[in-house]
Length: 319
Image (cartoon, rainbow, N blue to C red; front, side, top):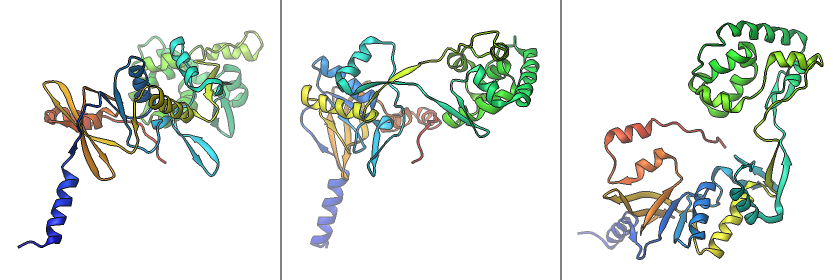
């Protein structure tokens, strides 16, 4: 015969593992309070569509947040705001207002005890490498021209064919692999063609000799930046959602399950402080990693889908 303590333990365990079912639908359940999730919520709010944002962390912004430590503010991830879409820029300006500043772009690569401009400029590279290393890079470049007309399929092949192996190893290889976490042999050449423009060693030599003006096409020369960091953008957007559009942003709420039937989401199970609540939904907008999203589905997808999802790779921060 069980004791009162046993009965209480069983009751507590049952309550913690069986989700409490909420009444009304939350509308569109938005998974993730980062830039994509909050912007999606803002778009729905402008249309008068009900929604709720569920964010597992205690602050919004995702990997584009700003954290404060001992009076200093640190940007964890993406922090440069730049777009060619006027409606997007107007949205940013509406959210941040006068504290949405314009700043010049300044990026550097540290190599061999020197700082080089990034994107690379011809005159800067040859001037800082010195005569001997520049000569070796030039010879490597001429050697690479033998296969210049060959179709390049990877980032490594594309860059090596245009700049030579020595310059690729010096700048492009280590930088790219550190940022993206995968070898240059696994990145498609199309990506290189989009990001590396108008850099030519032949033009570089003419520039150094004063026979040609140096001009390098870069993605941007300046960018917009909230005065207190990118996190300010998302914190202000959270405030606007809750005050002007009645869209709650539920922090410390981790979605652990998505119930679906006949190809449509029916509910989400959210865990908060060890307790789980099931919310009816009209639809789900997920900004989570696809790998995590697939694992949340109930009923679960077929085994081959789960296996494919488990093999996806993502780049994250080590803090």
